[in-house]
Amino acid sequence: MLVRRLPEVGLRTDAPPDGAFYAWCDVGHLTDDSVAWCQALLADCGVAITPGVDFDTVEGHRMVRLSFAGSTAEVEEALDRMVASPLLRG
Image (tube, rainbow, N blue to C red; front, side):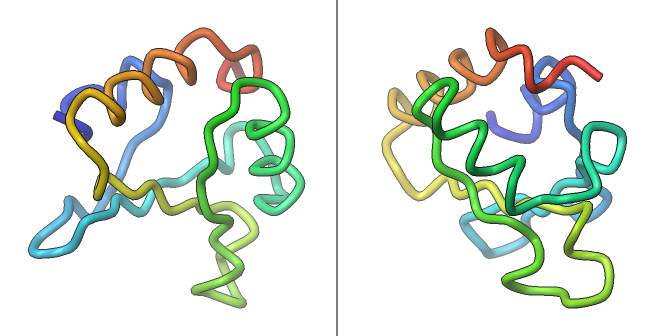
């Protein structure tokens, strides 16, 4: 469900989840500072995602990690909020 809805949110992943509960997504078309962008997304719509710099010191500035370890309803709600956020309009 998360991977299916990523285009609707305006994100993509080149590495679909395979045994993990997260998606690794490129936000380089929206920002070059994934930390500030994740903070702004949390403030804007109450959705917490992880900046890529926590996992990759080279390309992480343009990447984020979205967890889908919550319930389907919680993930759907988070995606709905993200779709409505102006931060996801490049």
